[in-house]
Image (cartoon, rainbow, N blue to C red):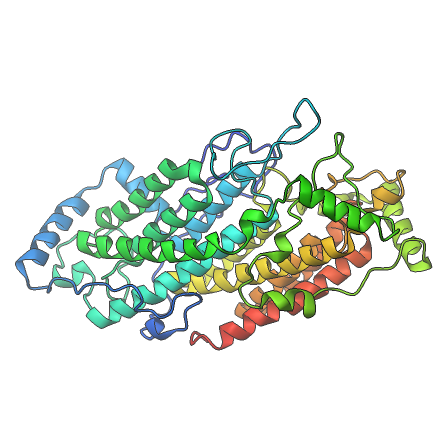
Length: 512
């Protein structure tokens, strides 16, 4: 049975701060998974030691009194769902990976807000210890957002590999296999039902995202419960399928939260001592340097993101392998040519060029550039009718590549501390807001090239389109007059190179 999903522009959340347009989620039909992947439990995990690191007890035998009672209860629950229950079935009828990705993007947009200055000209920073006090935690800028997307995707992938292992170990089929009179309101998948993949996602995603967005605990719990309950109202899972999946997902989420607590993100924003030290060291070089254009000057954004633990490369690779060569020095002919080009777009950008700049703005109150690429990916994932396991695999390598590219980008940004065009020529009037961090290289360009490279691997027929979109995203920063062309071109190259590591891992994980 196909059930249309009602698309919500801000994904179920009442996001009062959504001042900018967010692309609406497409309408998706429910579908039968295109591939069963009976061997999916043998795929290589991202962070778990193995698919069996968290044990799952054997389910009750299909002929047992315990299971027969569950079937009877399910038959009653799915016989005549209410309008509210049908709405939940509809909302969760598509791939659960896509739905949780949309929820995460909505949360990123809600919290992507910069605080106002204090009376003394300083700026308050969000505190994870006091997340509900102004400014609210987190400040989900692109570094925080791409990390959240990566953890959500990679952890979901590992949790589903584990789920697939136990599904085929215990091989308890869908409930309607044992009682054909059970009414079903969704496609019955051709995979074992225990543990439920939807409950695994509900348990994992609720737990992980509550860690990332602690003020949203009640909202996330409601989404997880709706997802699990929808499977009973739809007649496709009994209560024990859901309990086992939820427990497995929550346990694996806590393992990934352990990684997150030690990945260095807590120190990313820095403090006055860090900011002053970086500025003093860069000033001592005698070269023109980046300075905040805001009044009062806002502290530099995420100066330590280049030190966060990556996924597909090592921390030493960040600066030994992927740190870029220096940009053209201010005052050279090559630099002046690049600066003059920015001035040209400041004065003479065409409507089409301005439209491109605005299309890829992805600034405050949006789900950021990495979120934009997750949005692009979801339609390809859905149209291929990928199971949650395979969908998570695509999102995992996509987001790990983008986070690793972002880490490398931020390393070069703060190593060179290169001035924005407006730092050098005040006659340049930007089309887009000026980001509060150094210019070289472009983050949009690196994120986009990494995303396009990974998506081109998974959907090769559309590789050319992804590449074109990445280049357009890069040029949008030039058209917006906030980056030089060399920022964009070198950012593209860096993103492509970093993404190849994710593709190499994908080729060896057992899912090719």
